[in-house]
Length: 230
Image 1 (cartoon, one colour):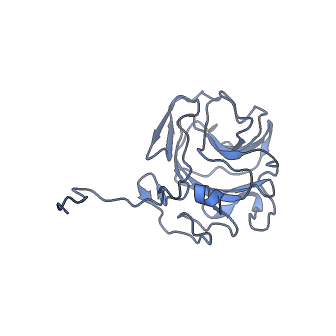
Image 2: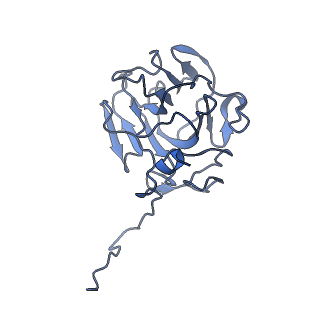
Image 3: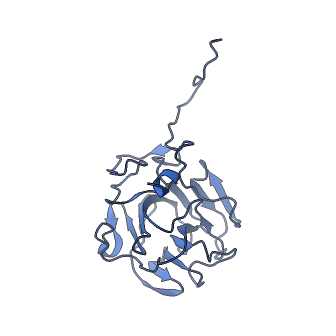
């Protein structure tokens, strides 16, 4: 009534999918960790200690049922021991090493190793910086799939359930996890951005929840409050 309006004085107004009716996961700055900086609404993780192997960060949301998809851009390389994965929040502890502990985790280390509860083996060719890592977590069948830039590792197929990265997610609440060391990760849990850059060509998403770079596998949705209750 008094002509007091919100206007953009300079720069660009950025649209976000996140809103009170649907809150997307981010990395959790309240989880005990150090040698890390969070930015862009806790969607970007930047590590600063090359030997802090016991430090990792988890998502603000987890799931014990349903099927969920998210993406992580590998922006800056670390020392080759950084890794991404999923972790059982029921067993996750401060100073948990997600490549040698036994608390319930699946992780891919950037030397090509797959780690499943302290059992390791060669699994994939680590993508170079700039790659978008895909994760599909199927809590209904206890499986998780990882891939890069549109292709799933190990000929995995999240839709049919064939060739998962691991199939141990049989109980508990599981969440994304990153061991950062000195690497940097720009993550998209559905807002449609990697840091302040929009996805270059949004893939299909039948659930209608979230915007992603690549096609969301049929039957999967974003890890968000709406996605958890869909």
